[in-house]
Length: 234
Image (cartoon, rainbow, N blue to C red; front, side, top):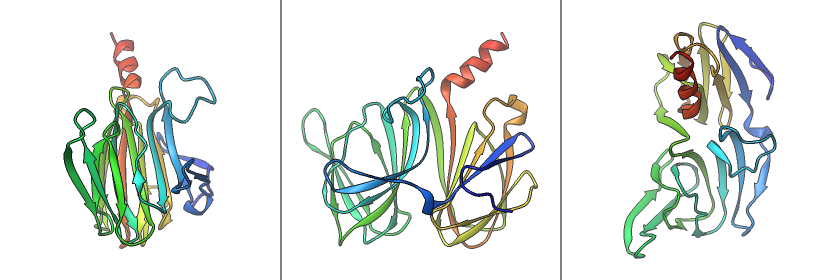
């Protein structure tokens, strides 16, 4: 049975939280060029409660981009951008040192993916009107992540990570974790699966997916958490 947003339940050693897309809070950009809806983040180890949003180990969000312009820079952050809706955009990446052109990232089809460094100068041009994009940011040295697009339903997978996020990018899908009752996801919904704090042998979760929906699957680990576990065993 699906759970309301922010109401978590446990399945074995995993804690599941359903985040409804309709409940995400929109934060307008200072330049007026769009809005961001944060899905989830992990603060840097040792960050005080109420730490600034920029002090993250990893962050996942959805952005509505209304106008062309330069991206904000995030030093030391690896970024993954996925086109969700709209005609798309073209990202011109240049060298921070010389200003020379480095690469052109073209996202014109739904689920096209661009990967780039957060400190790289990026100028975005909209192809034909506003877009909606999925944004994964991971701070190098503080966290690590794997990212996949799951388009095939009726598949079982085993994933080991502190946190797994399953974002429904298209259609509808059902997700079963460790054999529990399935959770239904509509486009824009996210299922968060947390195993942080569990013993290494209990961090693996079995995920079964059903339906024709497309899921963005992100497995995330905060690096210091694993260093602490290794230290405790020595």
